[in-house]
Image 1 (spheres, rainbow, N blue to C red):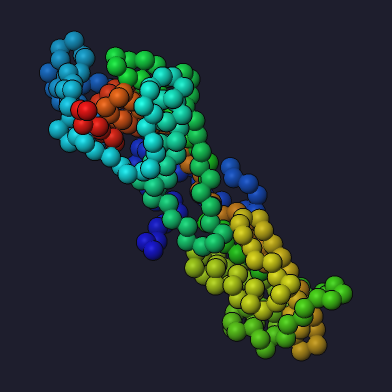
Image 2 (spheres, helix red, strand yellow):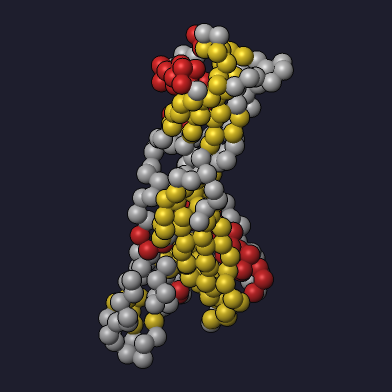
Length: 277
């Protein structure tokens, strides 16, 4: 699995706003081009010739047609305001996750919580439709907070001897808590290290419910040389916040997308193209 930094710069397509470690819920255009020049798309689409009246001269068949992102999003056979809006919302959801972000969970606690929708009404343009999509949300990569305190276990609790804790850092934290009353260990690297500790705790006690996402917590009990220590494991809400906009042009042949508000969506990056039937 390729590991990726949480707040990797994603260019114009996505703007990361912040990274948070709390346990709470989250929080370039060039201004036009001269006449008779080539206009490149902000998403890397092929330039189109621009006439002196400012309108783009487009060919009926792009050179790189057929083309597809292979996203598994079915295009509607009949385009109208309703079907094209539903298509763009589903296409952008998958495209942004799989192509722009290239999201891959790095632990069982990770979650992708970006969403969005078409803003306003689809606008008929020529033989197709133009739409604007706005998205936002968070990508969660929880860390793990392990808080150990001396405590009386509830009746029937599965109390584990500290000798069964096969991790020096955790065993040391438990012994410190037994001596001083409390201690804390923060697993502050998201991903595989978090999963390792979650699996370790689950293997120690049948009473420990496996954590499944941000904010989850549970407490197994450990006997440290006659002193009972409760070990509360909490998945934090470490995350990055994002917001972005994308503009689409869709007709029976092509799907184009740009993230530059000043670029005509019909000049956007070619994402899908059907050969003439």
